Length: 401
Image (tube, rainbow, N blue to C red; front, side, top):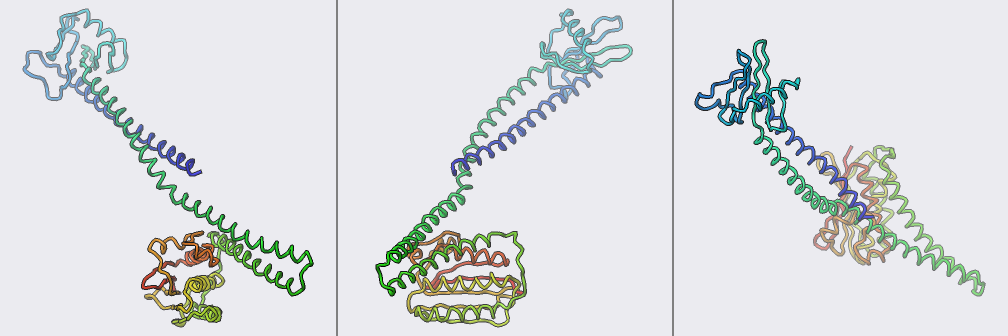
């Protein structure tokens, strides 16, 4: 899939690049040709209006091509004016040129067989035709054509190489997400397989009827425990899916975040006490925000659960809520424990991300902090992690009312 995605990226990119190269080089060739033709026609027009005698030294400054002028004299004979480039003694040749020009109704044009451009100036008493050799002009256009083709081919292969490089960079996040998802599916399957095996084993033992009632109660207790674990995983996945629905209109009301946090802390105090953890709090009162109360209650719960899992036995967990400037508040949950690397601090909020096997054994599926990030984003806030001096800090900044 990744290879097909990269190939599609390259094909789309090269199609656009090819169209742009063709358009740019085509316009360069077109305007160059038009400019040369305009200058040549303008020169012939000036020469036809003011043909100068051959004996005059030099030629006008605007004359850049070999030329000659043919016109009918008073007696009907041909009178020529030479720019010094041609032998005009062949009258049959001149008459043939005059006939070809006369057959063409256009005022100016090109005689391809002779590499000549002409300009005809008719008057009631006279017909004057100026000719110019366009061999150098054609050579210039031929050289420009070869240059454009060379630039186009080199540009195509250069952009092809750049496109392949960019395709790898562009699909890297997708590839990484797919790899994390595959890892998550494998881990979740393993986590589900073990409790399912326990449930099936206990159920089969109960079905056999070979065990006393006390033992059957133990089997039922085991089934209930592992079923709750499975339910927790499914609920986390469903909650993450719900928070992904950004088009769902949430009901925002004014919420006293200070009171909400204190209520959640009361629920965690016995959990931390049993785990041998010390909980210290510093809550600034009457900090109010606009938000969805149900989702905001999940935020401290996720962070406190995370801190309780990874704090060492006998360690400390600190929670603070304070005003940050005039328009924001800052919620911080910190715990003692193994420090996170800067890269882990950045990656830890990605879904399905787990740093090591220790977190797997703690029952973490890499979804809790992703859910927290989605909730914070929904409330136009920011969440980030820091680690220093043996402490891990999780910060949430939210706008105040």
